[in-house]
Amino acid sequence: MKILEKIVLVCLIMCSFLVKPFAMQIDNSIIDQSNKGSITIYKYASKDGHFIDGTLSEQYVDDITNGPCKDVEFKYLKIGDLKQIFDNNDDASGLYYELSEVFINKINTMQLTISKTVINGKDYYTSEAVNSLMKSINKLGNAYDNNNNGATSGNEIINDWVNSLGIAMPLTDENGMTKVENLDLGLYLLAQTNSPQALSDGTSLAVAKASSPFLVSLPTTNITMINSEVAGSMWQYDVVAYPKNEMISVRKDIIASGNDVEDVNDLLTVTTDKSVGEYVNFLLTLDVPCLLPITSDTPNKNRKYIIVDTLSSGLTIDDLSANNFKLTYGNNAYDSTANRQLIIDEDYLVDFTDQILTITLTSDGLSKFDSITMDCNLYVNYQARLNYLAAKNTNMIKEESNSFKLIYGTFNSADREFISNQDVKVYTYEIDITKSFSAAIDDISDVQFSLDLEDEALYFVKESDGIYHLYDGKETAEKVNYVNVSSQGKLIIKGLDAKSYVLTERKTMPGYNLMRDNITINLYQDNQENGTLSGATIQSDNDKLIDIVNGLEQGQVNIAIKNNETITSLHTGGQGLNYGELIIGLTMLLASLVGFGYVRFSHKYHG
Image 1 (tube, rainbow, N blue to C red):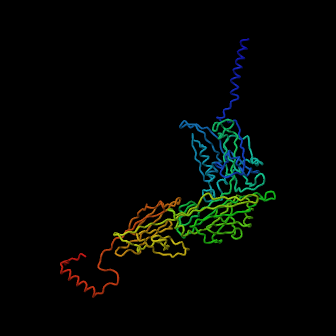
Image 2: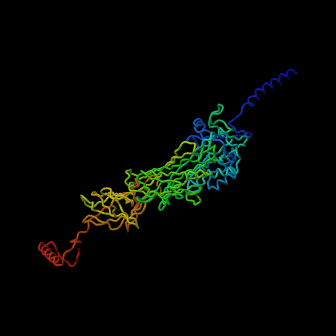
Image 3: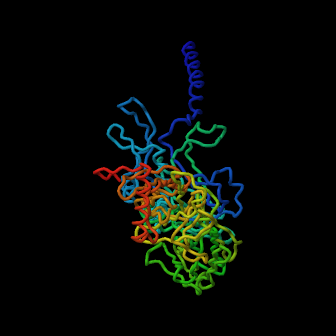
């Protein structure tokens, strides 16, 4: 019995050593499927540029200057589960998301796609595919382009969808914090479902829209050290997110027309090519903040909204009236008649001085913005003429580039400037002709050409010998239809669009032939990203089409034209000889030639 007691005691002691370590050890590198998760959100008004994919990076929290936002509502919706899948085909195991059918259907209605992986006959999705989809949603503006300028953006569609199906979290407190616990593991889509503009102290913000929707995976692999666990070594069940405030965005585009329509999608582009004298149709798109209801406690109404658009020297605004300027606002596409219109000289004032266009909303216009209760865009549409200075640009690539900014402020905030995120660019091209003859001639500046469109005569202004630019329709310089080469045979014609032109030699040097046919010069531009030409061809009336490659990278077409001597004859042109002079001259010439034996007659005439 004593021996048995000792054996039992030893076993108990050994068991205590075995059980204790396993009871205390938690393997955080493996997901505990019985665990629950939580999501904590901190909503701050923070500095621009401290965000990663729409979420504030945690190390920048201390840099926040404006403080937390209170009374913000978020909703969450579970859209998938995390699965470890073994592929029977290649004996590989991987981590995938299984997305809900209702979410996939929603994506399909938005005409978006997500890359799927079919394993053992079933659809799964990698985290890379899901992240790529969210970026596509962020960029989607289904009204008219892919730059989130649309009346209903992808973010707004998803926010509305989550608002209708999701579960609301508590409103953010005075610290900007809200939290939801005891969540099943899986993939969650979160959206901000209201747009208050006030900080916890009542100060208003220049916040235009709700945060972009974002994803939270429960659990997620830690990206920072947690409890001495290095990054990437454990599963984290309690996720903290810092969603970005979507501040006011401003953007400038060109509304394409004519030959440009084929070069862009849905008529909007940021680059185009035009001839000097043509008009460029610009569109400014700006967010209009949706402010809190105005009360004595939160007097956050708009007090300043000024647009400053600085144009390059090659662009001129000829008309400052309502005939040229159209300002509308609403949550529809820029050309929708459902948008509301602002009235010039009543709701806004226009000034154009020293190449600076300034549009200032008056008190009447600001009061209209104060009444807005939805996310909204302001659209500014106007035209500017490409003037002759665009052609005189000294850069090799002839480019006119410009952007704009918005100066905005509310009742209880300092002025802030919001600058458009890109320049718009207008390009022109040139034709460079080298004229030569079969024999050297010191000065050939009398040689003259015309360059026209197939159905329109073009006029030019001389800059210097052999250099001309297209007449811009307004300049005071003398315009000409015919252009002369320089003494050395160079002719440069600038300020042209990518079109088809007809070159005709109108005058050449005495003793040389004119060109037999007109020459058609075709300039091609498939995209205007850098101001180069995508192609060029020349063709005379009866000859084959010839590709030109020289100069295209500089936005030029370089061609050479050479003239040969005329066939020698006794006399052509002028007033001619009378018959008496002709007979006497021929008789004397023949007599002298026969006498010296230089001419022989035969029965045939060889000429």
